[in-house]
View 1 (cartoon, one colour):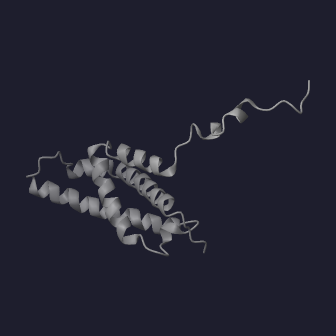
View 2 (cartoon, helix red, strand yellow; view 1 turned 90 degrees about the horizontal axis):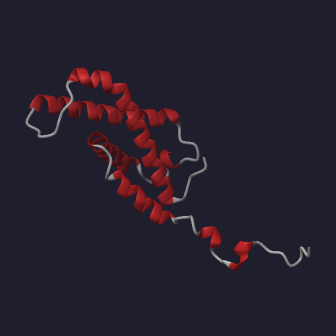
Length: 139
């Protein structure tokens, strides 16, 4: 067999390697669409996370470090959890909202799970912002 004349089948198709890949803009649009389908509590927490990260998102921010500090990220989670807890307490005191609310007993039992959900949502939002910006700081 003449190996000089043999070539891979995909050589005849110039963009074969790119068929199963989406560009980053399409991927971010997909992500934002899927985030609209989050459950009610996750949507509410996502809004809090988005607002807090808007305050922290600036040039030289620690979220753009090559290796963000875990302690600082935990402090962000703590501040988000405090915001959520005060909101839930206000919701329980007013009782005029149409949305289902969590009693304080439910809050205490669900708090570890809510904290994990908030942590994952925060890290994912940070990843999304880092992907959009594409310029990391190497300190």
